[in-house]
Amino acid sequence: MEIQKRCKYCGRSFIAHKMTTIYCSPSCNNKDYKRAIRQKQIAEYMEEEKQKTPKVDILGGKEFLTPTEGALLLGLSRATFYRYMLNGTIKAVQLRGKTIVRRKDIERLFDNPPTYQSHSEKKQEKREYYTFRQIMEKFKCSKKAIMTRVEKYNIPKVYQGRNCFFDRALVDVHFAQLIADIDLRDYYTIPQLEEKYKMSHAAVLSFVTRNKIPRITQGRTVYYSRAHIDTLKGERESIDPNYYTYAEVMEKYHFSKDQISYYVHNYEIDNHKQGRFTVINRKEFDRIIKERMETNSLEKEKERRAKLPKLNAIPEGYISVAQIAEKYGVTPKHVQAKTREAKTPKFVIKHLNYYNEAAIEQLFNRDPEKFKVPKDCITAQEIAKRFKVTVHHVHGRTREANIPKITVKHVNFYELKAVEALFAKNEASEELQKNESAEWLSGTDVEEMLGITTCARRSFVSRHKIPSKKEHGIAYYLRSAIEDVNNTLAKYSDQYYTVEQICEKFNMDRGKVYGMLRYSNVRKVHEGKFALFLKEDIIKMIHERQFT
Image 1 (tube, rainbow, N blue to C red):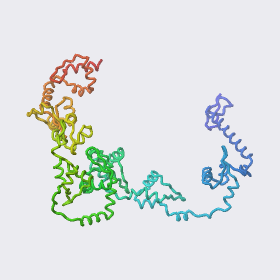
Image 2: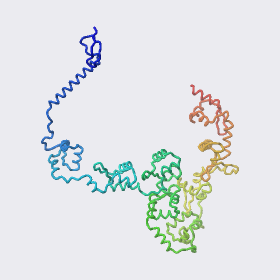
Image 3: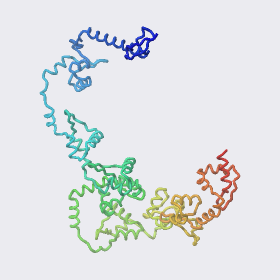
Image 4: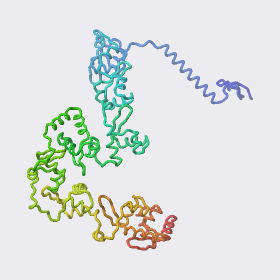
């Protein structure tokens, strides 16, 4: 039996097989069942709402309230109500596990309230605050820069309506750097770094961030410390960037060494020895120079010098610093230090210092007749001459190595054996020194001769133990030894590999190569200090290991 009907849920026509069928599918049956239940629940809820009685005031006539009830009474949030309790506006009692307030205290707030003041009047009274616009105009910075600096230095904010104000005194202290006068000779800008070091803008930002370079921001321009960057880039000796060397001060301020020493000793500026350099605290020195430039001390110094008697001829019995140094075998710098320490009287003639010869003789107290050179000792000048280095280098190396020394009449003598052991690398063997026909090549000459890079040259001379020596900091290598090695390698290059060539060709390390050669029957030849292995056997051995 087939009866055409219309579905009760979706309304589509379908063929029913029973008279009682009213849905076209089980899906429509389920959906209509759920709809009926939902409508029933909605009807029940609406009926319950109609039958509910109006809400009763939860506070009623309660005399003591909780903070939540107090906030409800005043129409405030709980957080605001707690803030009023904290600052004492609303009195509260803290019991164990509960805080209560008295309703009368809340109502009493309105008995004698202070006169209401508008926000505009309050803002006009407080003149010790800056607005955003005032800070931006005075310090030439953006709103984002202001917020960054405010968060960094914890500067409090005061809100009045939609406006935000910042304490004037704190802003002046922490924002002063943005308009401070800076010496551009001590800083790089980003375009200068891009041009000098051939870096992109992104590379510069990455470099200064990675190395934490100190910077100063003025307006939209950022300045980075020149000393820190030059030190990292290798254009400056490895010296603390917070310190000057004498050479840097002379270049920046056009001072002589005597002038620098005058400021350092008279103003007690922080300084110390670092290697062969004497370094001076950068901030302290700049501060002293700035103070002197801003006062009339220079004018007073000129007046004082103008009153001094002008001498054009050297008085009898007076000698210069250079003459003292030559007579007593010391450096001019040592003479200046000793005379300054002893406050020896002097005459200044044409910017040169002249000292009384008798006072100098008494100061140095040197008797040439009684002076004897200690046995097995050598002076710094003799070390520098023998090993082809500077006297400064000698002083630095001997101080670092703690070489034993003896000081006699202000002259240092170093133990000969310790010095020879320290500077042994600078000197060739005795046989090579006696061989007048030995020819020495510099590192650049070796690289041109073999057609290799600097790194490869260093590896080559180290691997083959090429005899070398140093003169004035430059390494020289024996030409005959290099040619012997080169000829040996060229002689067997067609049929044999060296260990280094095996490592390079088959991408293996030396340990693995030696391990394979130790347990294999590879044919080899020995030529002097070289061991060379037959190419045919090496290739066969590598091939077998790859396919086993």
